Every structure is written in C-alpha cells, then in structure tokens.
Image (cartoon, rainbow, N blue to C red; front, side, top):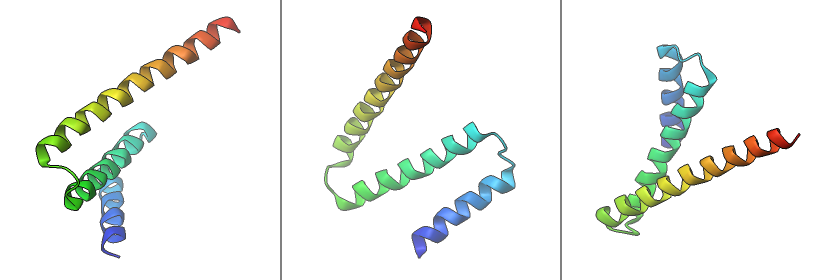
Length: 81
C-alpha cells in the first residue's frame, strides 16, 4: 500500500506541474521506476554501493548502445523500402 501511494503521489505531482508532453511523462515514469529498482536492489544488499554504481553505469551504457542499434536498424529498413 505504501508503494502504491508513493507512485500515485508521484503521478499527482507530475500532473500538477503540467507535464503535457507524452515524452516528458514517459521519461519521468521511467525515472521513477529506475529509482525504485535501484533502491530495491540496494536494500537487498546484493552488491556493495561501489559495485552497484559500476554495474548501473554498465547497464546504462548497454541500453544506450541498444537504442542506437535500433535506430540504425529502423533507418536502414526505411531506406530499403
């Protein structure tokens, strides 16, 4: 119940701030979920804080590479059509 109240409060704040753009809204939602994921992993004490920071950076870099490859693939498929 506490977590759902947290998420509802975050959504209410977003609406109050007047985030109209869907990109802004989706980016903010992703940030909320990423922070909750990071908090959860840190509480589980699966890794030390230093290791966690390094692993988070690596995952972020990999996500960026995947996005770049997806955009390349989309642009190539558009050119072929």
